[in-house]
Image 1 (tube, rainbow, N blue to C red):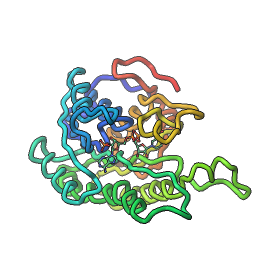
Image 2 (image 1 turned 180 degrees about the vertical axis):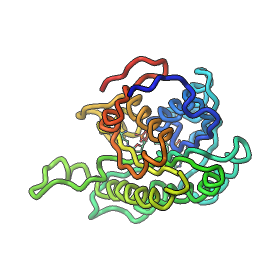
Image 3 (image 1 turned 45 degrees about the horizontal axis):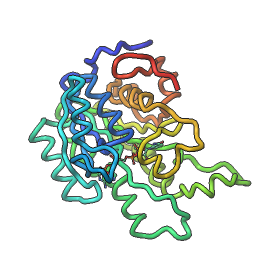
Image 4 (image 1 turned 90 degrees about the vertical axis):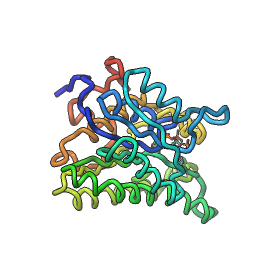
Length: 277
Ligand code: NAP
């Protein structure tokens, strides 16, 4: 059944979205804010900088221009002290977190044979341990408040390559370590969903069905030859999981377009126009 874009599905909720300075994180932050959440936007790029596309200030300005509420919290998710300070600062400034979206990622596409240990550790720290650490820090408040929602952003790279024989695009993509991080997130989320079920805390992963033309995807040349998905589609799918019934919509390894089809939801822009892929 199609839900109206009524702007109230997350009214009164506090959402923490990582990687909200650009790309998918910005789109999700804007979508959650449009549904009434106050969004804590976090990333490393606080102020606009000509070296990078997007910043937390830009995201906040877009949300406020649409009548939403958001606040910027600078944090390097690869640094443990930053993560601890992030959740404390959000709590002090906005209140306890109801919705956590672990979206940020630093990614290197390199063959396993020559993958540097330092980069491996950075990917694991930022994509996997950070998701666990932030969850550990917000779960007690969610439990006290009678529920919450944790969404981890994944990728179709988590799925094992088909073969043998293996097609050339797979080995040329060098996505084994990236896939490892996302597969870890997916298995983690399934386990957490079971652990937190009676607390009414949903835990899901969501991946774009097709690539999304973000600065990160562009830097990795993932947009040139692929079918692309408008960012509104993954943002809508994220909203469905974050605002869904935690007794029904949890423990999902979801993909944007199939999830929306299953739920019978039409993706919409922030101003309500239908979005098709
Ligand atoms: P993006 O354009 O590269 O944006 C990545 C975000 O993560 C930025 O906001 C960046 O902010 C933040 N980030 C990176 N390292 C960080 C760190 N150490 N501390 C804090 N924040 C950090 O990426 P995207 O394409 O939007 O991807 C978002 C998510 O979707 C990722 O999990 C990605 O794996 C997944 N995904 C994307 C696609 C796609 O087609 N785009 C496909 C499948 C999955 P700062 O640089 O300001 O810190």
